[in-house]
Length: 449
Image (cartoon, rainbow, N blue to C red; front, side):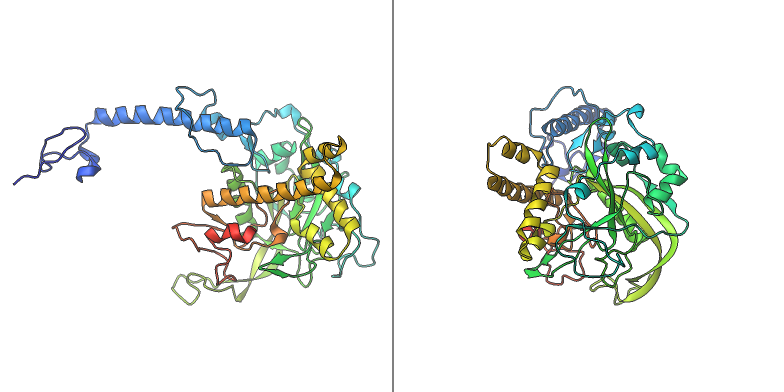
């Protein structure tokens, strides 16, 4: 007896003689070619329009939040997908279509002179010391001036033209020898200067005391010549600072490329993140703990524990970019040390850099100064909540969630033991030092709190 099914295309036909749709377990290979073409035309072009329209709404709102395409299906969009792909994602996570022309961009020397280093100007510097790189407790100040340690024979591995334009730097400059010298830390041009900030660390309910920029140094705050937007540039892996403890202050090619690719991808996905201008390799060899190279299944398969074998790897310097690198742990440190003067000075600087509208309200006496600090806390919490929501949207797991890799501005920072979830697992975590999965995928909101 033939089983007759209801088919959306040819109802009443037998399954033995016709295959049409998944509902009746049929194969799509028998669909008429004309129907396939019609389906493509009807679905593909409106889909282009709705994606572009959703992108335009995302741009016009100017926020880092995710907006679903739940509006009425538009017939036509003024923003094509090709122009959407050319849009430059800013370090804050909100996207903006680039309106910068080549004439607005600066050559490297003029770019360096155009920098305005507000952190160095507004905050307190550590006093003179004989050996600036000597590990020590640094108190009563916010940062230490320290120059990068030179590296041998730097070479370009990768550069981001969109990030260069975001800073106001001509992307052509990334291919010059002077660019290699500056962003490897070998020679800072006038207008650039090195500094490392001090901060603490709160992780898993425990306070770990003073940490700081152990292998990262800021070298300047770039001001875009047309928009006036400020972005701080930081070299990661450029040598020792007073906060390096017993470590060498260097980075390797492997981890630097991971951070470059991940931060630029996250920016393109609309997730608030630091950006990466470039990765430069050099000939200095760095020792790092890692896993043995073996194609066979071994006890290291799946990486159930941290790496335990020392390996010599090529060194690298990464230049990362953000409107500011002010961490929540910077404020925590001065609060823990009972240093209200430096705490409030840093809080004022954070407000000016990240939430200038709070500063304007205080200056206009619409709110008191104390209410301004409360607003700073609220905005920081809100930014962190939106950031975690974006992580969950794209299946991202930060891995190691501490207060020292939590930016007041609400951006993804420090791509260390991170990962993207391939198969849904609510507790999945790439962090091998977290066997309890406290920082697992769906535990991230609670960890952020």
